[in-house]
Amino acid sequence: MAPRDTITIRRPDDWHLHFRDGATMQAVVPHTARQFARAIVMPNLSPPVTTTAMAAAYRERIVAAVPEGVDFTPLMTAYLTDDTDPDDLARGFESGVLTAAKLYPAGATTNSASGVTDVRRIDRVLERMADIGMPLCVHGEVTSAEIDIFDREAVFIERVLQPLVERLPDLRVIFEHITTRQAVDFVDQSSDNVAATITPQHLHINRNAILVGGIRPHMYCLPVAKREEHRLALRKAATSGSAKYFLGTDSAPHHRHAKESDCGCAGIFNAPFALESYLAVFDEENALDRFEGFASLNGPRFYRLPVNEETITLERSETRVPGEVEGGGEPVVPFHAGETLGWRLVG
Ligand code: DOR
Ligand code: ZN
Image (cartoon, rainbow, N blue to C red; front, top):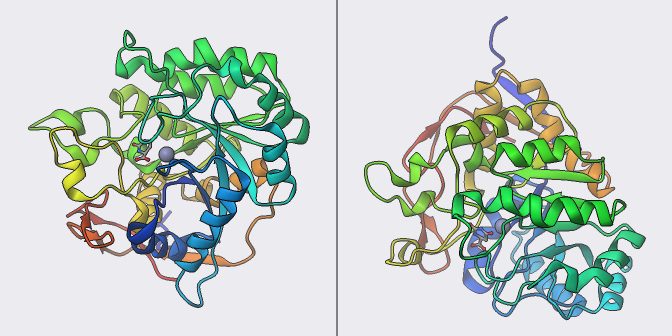
């Protein structure tokens, strides 16, 4: 069969990303709004978005950054802390301001210092979320100093996530930006209340990309990319056709100087060419027919939201990824900088 040269799918959504705030937000929102109808927006600002009122205000700032004539809806999350008020969360969800709540283990990643110190401390909040059907987005890494950074996701499953889904089988959990074979096995074996997002970078790179030939700060994100066997397990899961896996870029802009530093920030800015990046993987895996499920159908189904009615089309042609893009006064280096991708979003 001749390779397909165009693909038209329902307009996709991004089920996990970081917009930041202020000038950076202004610069990055248009990249996402150009491709996606909706996005789940992470609340790890400084200070974090911990209440319904803060999420409503942040949503307004994002909407104001969407270019004229572009249809894009940010879906807001609240950052859980040891002190989250379950009533405020429930009101936020029931009024439509909040779509989900986000569990950051304290100290796991960028701006997570106010995160949850022990998941048992938020039992009441999680019980309430299970009761009302509010989804929980999880950054799945333990933070104990004695656990090797490459093992933090697998240990989190054993110590935190498996016990959590056993305690609260009705809680709807998105295990975000998974990076390991163990996470794929866990999601496959869990009930339909457990799903996962997968980023483009974890489908494209393994840990060699960060370390071979010199330290490559623009390939560093959290959870950190793992060995090749894990990348292959993620590619298989994403292209398997299973409804448990869906698109979540984890696009996480940091200015060039903050990445190229003696303590470089974690995060890969993949928003500008996210669809071309994912589609390259589905093409390589001979799974173009499964791209729409991953990008446009499985996410809304899990979040119990309608699928988008509009469509988008990508064609087989070249997309040159620039070495940097404007990031609000300072440049940001995008994922695939300097490379050419084999697809292009045309409408
Ligand atoms: O690499 C990451 N960057 N991982 C995260 O979990 C957070 C994100 C950020 O906000 O920069
Ligand atoms: Zn993230």
